[in-house]
Amino acid sequence: MRRLAAELGIDVGSVTGTGPGGIVTRADIERAEGERQTAAPDGGTRHRLLGIDRVAAERLTRSHREIPTAIAWLSADATTLLELRAELNASQGDVRVTPFAIVLRVCVVALRRFPRLNAHFDAEANEIVNFDAIHLGVAVQTERGLVVPVIRDAQQMPTLGLAAELERIAAAARDGRLAQSELSGSTFTVSNFGAFGVDGGTAIINPPEAAILGVGQIVDRPWVVGGEVMPRKVVELSLVFDHRVADGAVAGGFVRHVADLIEEPRIVMSDD
Image 1 (cartoon, rainbow, N blue to C red):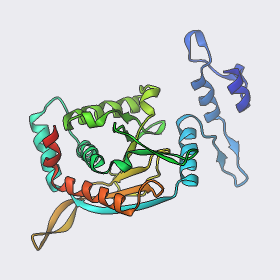
Image 2: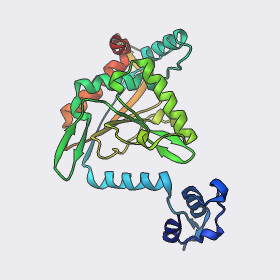
Image 3: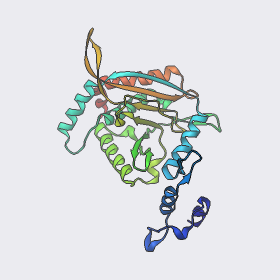
Image 4: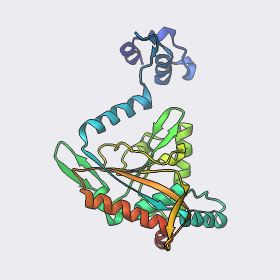
């Protein structure tokens, strides 16, 4: 801890330790650094990025600098998906199924058809590394910042299993109980913009992954059904992908398939 404190210019003797016997921990040093304010030329204050925020900033900067991205997006009618969710919650009292959990199951099925996107790009070797296992990264906002816990081997989980695991890792992320192994190794990430009450957005790829799917909030919108316009529950989908790994045909095919499965979600239940 003394080395870290020295790097940050903090006097260890001035830090209150919260470890056993009053030992100063890394968290104590980072908290002290976070509390220290530096005057900025414009009269504001500066705050050094630490912990999760610092790691996220480094990874996002790397992603923006190194990955040639492209975007494919469309809207999907999620009315039937919400009906399915209500049915599942009515019959399964122990597991709370969210629309996002069903979308995760949809992504697993879609990645089986478009495995090119379940991949990493090895920049040093200039190679694409495809995976049989699907390890889903799920962006979760916490008081300590944005974290991306991983649902490992999602291809082996039924919809209810995914819902239960999503609930577990989200709670663990908010409580700061995630193990380091649960924060690495994802092969594809899904970001829930709807959790912030927004229709959608452009996510940044979590390197070295090949793609990230953004899912907006489900809202009432006019939709054409059988030649007539009627109100339906609509969700916006945006796929940001590494153009070195996939072309527009693969990306467009994937997001179109995701939308089709959202509109007919009972198809994904056939494998459960």
